[in-house]
Image (cartoon, rainbow, N blue to C red):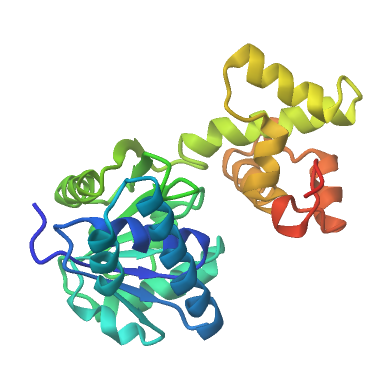
Length: 285
């Protein structure tokens, strides 16, 4: 059950501003506090959210009044002290355990003993993050998919010490924003990336071994397996560096050579061919 409906998002990058956007549209949410220490990224988030709301108006998903109410509901701030009254805080900073632990240690001190402390991590252990808090029972994974306003799935990851009441409240929050929450337990890569990243990695090996071209690999997976996007095109969308990082987490977590990163992916990172964000990956943009 959602009480006062005050939620905070830490980090206003691609995922953070998307999460703030979808919560702002929900009528049960009174206020969304979007926090980022970088004023430039925060300013960009304002523009992106406004642009995405306009896009939803044009598609008749929301009305102009809905969009205005949603935007006005968001407090854009660089002062993390504003999160104190939140019932839910979602961390959406970079995929770095040290950075996330620092954030969680801080938000744990600023929020109430019953506040849900969620992380949008795509692969880092919920249990490891929870160790940085005095309330590990309140820590949970809330893994949104990119692009957040469009993708329906939210992977809910329960840590070994996560209280069942926190799981229930998290499911309620996600359902309230018209997303579909699906539960799993803490494990390297959870379910989504434990299965997805080895597929991308294997596609890279197939390309490296000259089994097929990039276009052929993607075409076979799209037409033969019903995937909306081929694995190499998807790697470009996610970011080659992100794929490598997640594969390293899987390799370290499972200590199994089947998760070893394909050399092609490592070379692409070294050459700054990171996909869409750098203008070139397996494809040119």
